Structures are given as structure tokens and as C-alpha cells.
Image (cartoon, rainbow, N blue to C red):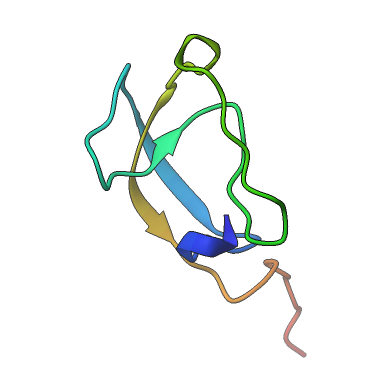
Length: 68
């Protein structure tokens, strides 16, 4: 979902919802990525799972290091 600034290792908070408003980010069973062609689906084939309400961006994978 890099097109909306959700990067690898980010966390998103999703509130379950059967529908979303225009401009909100919906959680459905398809992905958004500008590296892939745009796809459209008939409304009957799309089921909204919820809506994104927050994003926690991390700089990269969490690694633990030991201090000497």
C-alpha cells in the first residue's frame, strides 16, 4: 500500500466496518500498489472488512541489539 504511504513494517489500526466513506481507506481482500495495474471489481465481488483509522510508521524491521 505504498501509494498511500503505508510501508513495509508499518502497523495499521483497523476498525471493523461494513462500509467506508469517500476518502477513507477501506480494508478489503485486494491490495493497492502503484507497481501493479489498477483493477476493478463488480460491487457484488467486493466485501469491505473495515476501515483504517491509524498508521504507525516504523523505520524498518525491529532488531534487538545487546549493549556491551
